[in-house]
Length: 240
Ligand SMILES: O=S(=O)(CCO)c1ccc(-c2ccc(C3CCCC3)c([C@@H]3C[C@@H]3c3ccccn3)c2)cc1
Image (tube, rainbow, N blue to C red; front, side, top):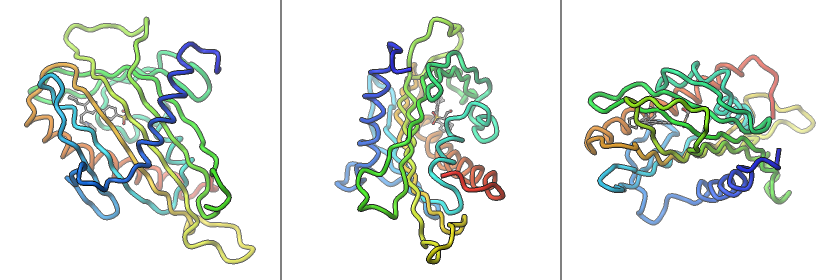
């Protein structure tokens, strides 16, 4: 409901993150650190208070699923364990509205660092095509995850809470377009994805360990997630 006290922050951050995701990776500020097929992963080396908080930006494109299908499965708590191998526990603490949930997630421990958890609101939204000019681009879908506080979140002394801002932006193109008068099939679907994240580990963790974990885990994470959605939706009617 747009009357919730968090709504103004949710609305503002979501649109800011959309703009941030749509900025290109030119200009030399972004360093390409992983490339697999259509997926390119960039990072900026950034430390805050001696902690590695390297912003990450990944661009990817996949055939066979829509932006809506990708965004929905990224947002939905029901399928989180099917693709996210980084989490041990996950609870939905609150339903702010039908498109905004508050998650509490316990992440698997990354030796030798202390175990982490993440408490964040997660908002999904469809951005209609701004002008009919980009007719080949269907709508854009965005999921924005932002750390927040919540009274019901249990505090476990042994677990360190990370701070995170994540956005997952998807846009579907009909490429190749279906034949004249034909309905699109999944062979016509090309979805471009931009994934941005800034994770502050919340407590000390060796820079070398974190950068190694990022380098290993993020490419695996995005590849596994997108393949999961393509496989899951393959036999289903297209959900634009
Ligand atoms: O896109 S999401 O919103 C999807 C919902 O789950 C999301 C993604 C990643 C994280 C995350 C949380 C903690 C940590 C670290 C910090 C110190 C020790 C653990 C990491 C590190 C970067 C590495 C990582 C990246 C991807 C997958 C697993 N591991 C990532 C949280 C949320």
